[in-house]
Structure formats: C-alpha cells, structure tokens
Length: 199
Image 1 (tube, helix red, strand yellow):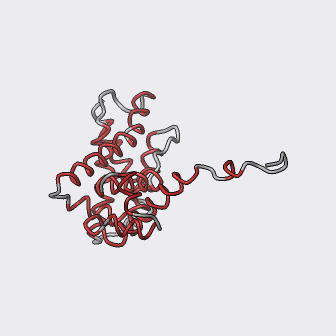
Image 2: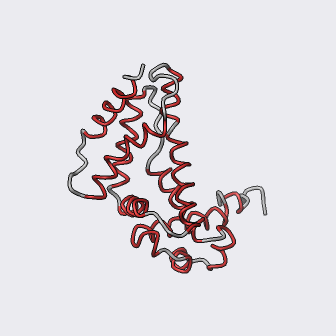
Image 3: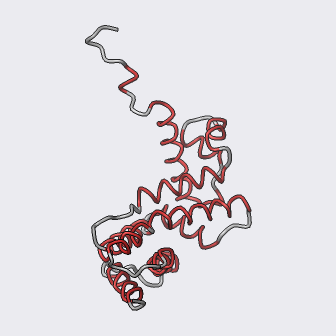
C-alpha cells in the first residue's frame, strides 16, 4: 500500500459486525411489522438479512433477545427522548413522536403485541425489559423537570409517561378515533395540570 492509497479498512465505518447487526435488526423490524412478534422466526430474519441462522444465534442467542433488541432500536430511533428545556414542550414532542411511530406498521405491530402480552416466560421477560428500558429513558423528561422546579419533588415519572402514552396507544389500537394534531399538546397540558395540583 502506498501513501496515496488509504487503508481499505478505514473506509468501512463499523466494519462487518456493525453491518450485520444493522441488517439483521432491519430485517427483524420488517418481520415484526409484517407478522408481529408471534410470527417472527430466526430463520426468516436471517434469510431477509442475507446471513446464516448461526450468525444470528451467535450474536443474539435467542429469538426473544433479537425481538427485544429490534424493538428497543426501533423505539430509540422512532421515539427519541426530547430535551427542549421545558417540560411542556418535552411532553408534547414525546407524544408527537409516539403518535407518529404508532402510525407506522412497525409501531402498530409492537403496540398490538404489547397489548396481548405473552404466555411464553422468555418473551414476557423481554417485554418487561423493553418497557422498563423505555420508561427509564423517557423518564428523563420528568426528572429534568423536577430538577428545574417545574414539577414537584417525588413526581412519579413512570405514571406520568403512562398517562401520556395510554390514550395514543388506545386510539392507535382500537382505531375508533384518530390521533388529531392537537391531541399531544392537550395531553401534555392535562398531565401537567394534574401533576402540579399536588404542590
């Protein structure tokens, strides 16, 4: 290799392992969107990603761990935790992102599967890890608001986020009423009114 020739390895950011992870997770999200958790198989995901089943098992170990990683990755990308500097705009932005995610095939599939739960202990545990992780991440919105003095000390972050999310999930799942553009802001205001009434 001459000085003029760049090292070919440096032209592959992340390398093969990162590419395989990205492709497998994308394939898993596609499979989730099409058939939900119950119909997702390692064989199907591997075929979609163009890798061997053994590659998937070696990296994730089980279908449940793959499903968990795919759902966490999708929700991290689709529902980022905002930091606008004010709790009202943070809650509104989070609700808007959740509403947009629930409007996608993947978001609907995840919401449907979450509503049904699972009798499979390994999958039920994966769901619990998923919810705990998402609530812990999004809870930063409430914790920052408490630190800024916008909400009272001891505010239950998990409950606040569940109250914000539940109406959006219900409308997406039941389909009886659409999620209008004004709903995220109205929900944020209702929740803040309730939380601040405790002061």
